[in-house]
Length: 332
Image 1 (cartoon, rainbow, N blue to C red):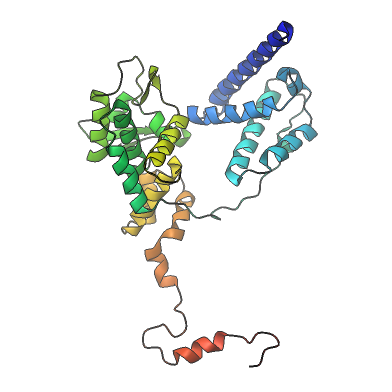
Image 2 (tube, helix red, strand yellow):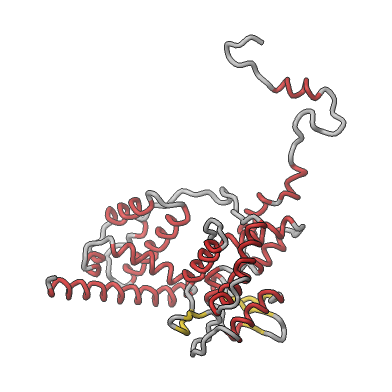
């Protein structure tokens, strides 16, 4: 291998890392984003920079609208709407940063195409109750190891409290008020809220802290075991859920689906949409409105009875037959 080429590659990598660190600091100062959001923006920006000719610093200064648009279209071609929107949002922020810091002479964020998507167009995907209980039951049987105790506590926080994986990863020892039985959660938009800590996940956290968590300087509740003492990332939380699914013989479940499952279960138990929004800590009622589609109790009175099936209906066969139309060319 050419030592000159190797040295150049290392230098390019270092320049990209320095650029992303500066971008992350700018997001923190100018927009006040949460650390997990900054991490996601920087990850997407890194994919964008990796697609440019190296060195990236030079390519950024030579960017034009055509290059930005071509990258966005190619990246989003086979991806779902959420993934496409995340990349577009991150690239726009990076281009604003590049312009604000003098790296580009023109504001190019308008060259990032908008991906089509409609609010409330999809249904929240919940996990069947039997699958969720199987997932937790199999995880509970692994509590004889430190890893098992940690993973079980994480699964309970996701399933019973509806926490986001980033919120679980950012939990710190000082966030738990054991006397009051409450949990302080740093959510989206740097919002800090207090939640009741039910006995089941509380006991699981105690088991992990007293017999599993390694002694370390970090104040994070959930840490790695090998090497010991490193805070878990949101990605690691998602990996833990996926591994638990595999051990339970289930198809892979995303950590966020456990949040959807809690909301759906609450509605089926008779909770109102405002109550669901309060538990999930939604800032807007629009975020909770999507669960109206799976609120079977509220939707049932809106359903029109099929002709002939209403109580006391007469002539059911004739009513149903009147809806049919003869096939073209057939004899009536």
